[in-house]
Image (cartoon, rainbow, N blue to C red):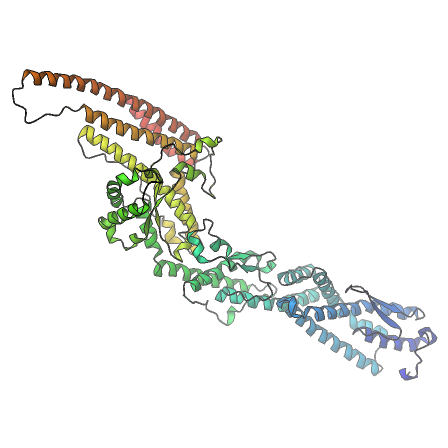
Length: 630
């Protein structure tokens, strides 16, 4: 029957079933591309993209209605996808939505080509409504799956990685339908191409080319590299580039590696060392189903960036030389300069912290460095003097970011001593330039300074005891034994600058723990022992010096009676003072042994939670046992 002879003003039920079928096929073909027919109407809800309904003339043959309604879901899917493509193609929706929309548009072109072929068959009289339903079935599942995806994406206003995650999760959910799963995987790959282009520039060049904020790495441009020498938390290294929420699921396990790779490339660029990871035909990043080739490319880029940066810092900026120099000066590995400095700066260091001249101390330090073996070290010029305003106990207890195993419950225990000298607050610092400030950050230098202050004061106590011993015995001093703080060999077996930072921090934290700087109660006990040692040394030198009977060489060999009487008085006084010396020394010894025993007991009890204290406890308690055995 010729459609031009049909009067469409009549209800469709007016016509014979054979004529109705022809009319319905024509209307359904129109509905399949979003166009209303004469007897099939399309209604969309205002403001609701997914509210699409189809209405048929109720007078239509029931069998034809049933067949037409089976095809309506395909028509609805086309409308939803077409609306999504039009809305998400706008520039503000991001590169991933643009790429996804382009892939959907290509799919719709194939779909429309299929509809055109069906219409051609219909014009030739070779298509029935049952045949139309047969040809539509292969597309039904794919179009419906895509319509579900775009409805979720539109409802949640997804963009970037959220769209990729949605596509991938939907593909996994369709594991039982291989055709639909392959289609969704293809859509995922097409949509991810734009995302992978952003990723490529980051891992190969260290550049974030992300105009719509879709990439999972954020850059905080307010943080500058110069802040590393002042910022204790090293925010530049940890927060200049950071991971955002919404990482694509196929990159989640390697996200930290991706972040680190680009960060390393940026450090080299900040150093003026322009470098780009080598690329090949196989280095293009693509995510396609089970193909994990992109993971290997990312790992290769990371290995390149890590190795290049580590070599740059080690070779060009002499990281090991700087660490060796700091070891010499702040860990007292090479202490001849310090002995000379303590001699010439004795008077200045005896002043209170607010009275000392840092400039004078700096000049004396420079003099000590130039006149000792340290003069041969070209890196000693970075050494500077610092006079803190708080005691070591107070400073270590307020040290940020360190978990103190024992905290004093009484805040008064951490009050500053009434009288504190620069000997107790003096410290050294080291001038560090970029990029070495990544490793030798403000935090690392603060740890070094705490260790130096502890060792410096111990050195002062040792010198005072040696002085007292020299006065008493007339010998040069004591040969003390100790364990040198050696460079951690772990630094020589690192693969990245982050490994260096981690091992360096581990080394410093170990030094802090074994110097008891993280345990305020034990540190206070050690300082009490040091204070007793200084009191003992001062008292011993004064008592012994004042009890010496000096012989005057100008006196005659046969002294007069008056001289004999004077000497008898001196001998009597000397004997009395000698008794006082002996009594005082015994008193100091008793108090010292009691404090030492207390420290040993505290170490022994603390070793249950801090195993590294066990050997110190055994050493102290062993020394005490030996003393009791004599």
